[in-house]
Image (cartoon, rainbow over the protein chains, first blue to last red):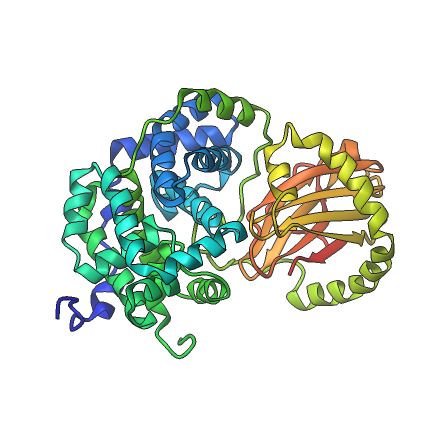
Length: 207
Length: 256
């Protein structure tokens, strides 16, 4: 059984996390959080600095999910404007500044690909599921230039990696992922969770 | 607590990756609201996804930078939320109760339903007038345009109990609404109208209405952070706003 199904996800998952990404976010992340606090007060210089630190990652993620460059640039601008408008909503208690920005970015990207216009196209892709994973994986591979992330993704089981890749980089819902991979919905849910837990632990303190 | 016959905790991973569509998402968020360990887990998993995101970095076209910085300079910022930012973070249960109780909210909403029906007759006229006004803002206000052009944009109108009419264009897709009002009762100095989003995620401040607009046309104001099950409410508050409503609502519109 390559999936590690025998492993109890419940126990390891509910254990309170070590500092991990939250406390050990590092200087760069702290700086981003401090900048966001200034942005919340309308500081445009701080906003320019936030832009410079995040725009590349936001666009990279959106491109991976959305694919179309013109649309991706639109979404990226929406995300950066979200950051400006809602900087006051960032709460360092709830996670790192980077996670806050990338969550906004991912949500926007996913909304774009799930919009009605795209729905039909995606349905077709789900129908020809053999293509989808390779397609997503290829797009990701081309962009995955962080060795540590690559290594940690490599430490997942095949099904965990496929589930996480299709959901996060492909923007598919867990039901769609189940359809694409031809496995039960419940299995996909646990693989996504186990996969992310393993990633989180592999990526360790310097998230 | 069990959800849909299976352990709801297993959705945490899919949720952290925005892979849970409605209505499952709302159900899971309700579960999160009462589950500290789940919220903590989602936070940790989101940090992991942020690392996945960081690995895809590209160099953005230089011209986008100027465009974004310029637009930001012309875009109004949101006030701090009492609850965590809805779109990005797991909702935390409000510790303090809102001054008005959910049952009252329902009662007000029911009372307003009649008013809404009456307004519906005039809706065509309102729509037309609104559209003209709102069109003017499209060029400069990105956020307004995003809501108005959303495929699921919907318009609702309601009377304000103390006088005036409010019109809301909402989009769940954009998780935002555009608020306008006309002929609001002019308040004494030191008081102003405050908007709220009220729903399963708690009661969140949604912005102050500039006193200059009382008695005239107000807005369009963009309120983001709209969540499933929200209503938009309005109360009279001290001019600098309250973190929590301190008076009964003069307006309550269900956005379902």
